[in-house]
Image 1 (tube, rainbow, N blue to C red):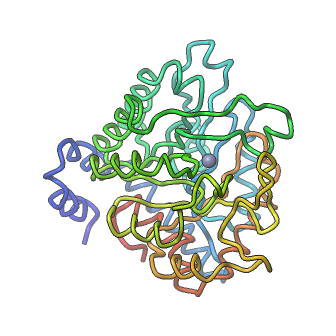
Image 2: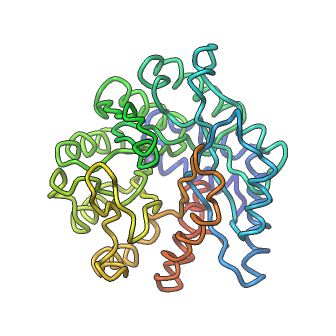
Length: 350
Ligand SMILES: [Zn+2]
């Protein structure tokens, strides 16, 4: 079945959802078809060499500092299939009036078979002081370039471990997911027909608003980043593998990335092991493993590189592969690249 026909069928299935049609046609444009064929060739070449390529669906960088050639070399060296590397524009850029950084276009101009075009990450002050302009700018770019997904929007975000180390405690973001910015973000994703990512710390009080949004925007495909990353267990008593399974069953458009810390990683503000997938001996907990194996199509590989850790890609790659290696072969391949492929292109990788 050719790609245009696939998209038409996909469209027909989703047509009742207002606004989806526009982007559905754009997905089938020549540029996306060209990218897709380059991606497939690269993944197939890596698979044929006996390695496991994965699609890093969620990494970001400082667009004014990133060394594009160095990242591309690393992808080759580490047999990483593809990377959705989004720009986290800087405060300086914000001050200069920038509302969208065209890093994705620059990445594709150099390495179209390695990078997936993705919108900018959503962080303060962009999302707190100019959310409307920023969403509009990302929306315009999504149609023009085009983009295959939107970046990671920080709705609830505690200071990261590295920021704690540097004494930067001001990145404590709390934007209501069901507030005006949340509604505009979900509506934009529905209209464009491309997925977006959220950083949304797990707290009991935050779960109902997210569920409400997922129910209200069934055509917005959401990647909830960092599955099972709970920084304060006492704030998240109801979050369990059974709870996540319930979400998976109720919300077909909800996905999760698997960027989480290793078994020894401790969140410095709570001193808790925040990646809850691990048991006390460093293995995957049976209940989380069971969830990954039962619903592998809803989980995605991700490294979560950032502007302050681009040089640690070897380490992040090793840790992510250690997680993948603990899965049965079929789930391993599905999570490594199969799920991302289906999410981005609406078809099974073959
Ligand atoms: Zn995140």
